Every structure is written in structure tokens, then in C-alpha cells.
Length: 136
Image (cartoon, rainbow, N blue to C red; front, side):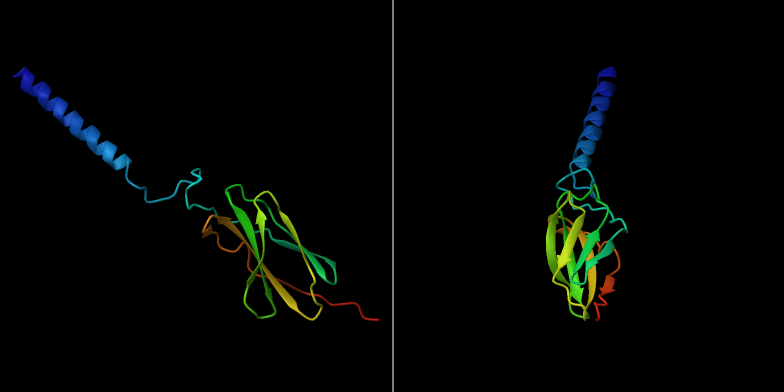
């Protein structure tokens, strides 16, 4: 009788361990933020700032996001046109200077964090600046 009891306990243990093994090998329903192969990105910090350098230059600055393992993408919209990729910048850089601006246009900027093909929502709402120009 004891042999049947121990055999039953052993069989139940093997079945339970097998189920645990199978469950642990399935793809999780959420991404791991510390796995570099993950599609996980945290929301960007709301910190995109513009500084007018000259009538034709503006400097963009932002806080670095430590979960971005790829790069940053800067997009610009001129007046009411479409957003176009202006530049792709490595993850360690937190400034960009846009040059060749015209005083008659309004410029909107977006900053996006990218991990491979996965992109965050834009860093902030569009930020616009219209250059006043210098009148003599």
C-alpha cells in the first residue's frame, strides 16, 4: 500500500513540475522592460524645450529616457504640412540644433524614442515657434 502511495505522490509531483515548466516557457502577455529584445518602451518624459538661437536656428533639448535602447527620432512639421523625419539621434544625445529656418514659417517638433521598430508616442504635443525676423 505504501508503494502505491509513494508512486502516486511521485507521479503527481512530476505532473505538477511538468505543468510549471510548460507555463514558464510560454510567451508572457506583457513585455519585460529589462529585456533588450523586448518591445517595451516607457512613456517619454514631457520635457521637450525649444530655444531660439538666431532667426534661422532653434535648439531642441530633452531629458534622456533610460529605457530607450535604440535612438531618438526628431520630426518636424512646417506650417500645416506633414511631419517628416528631420534626424535620427543616438540614445546618449539630448540636444539637436535645427538650422535653415525661415522667419515666415511656423515649425512644430516631435521627439520619439525608438527601440528597433517599436516607437513611443511623441515626447510632447507639438511645439511651435514662429520666428519674428529682424526688421530695420
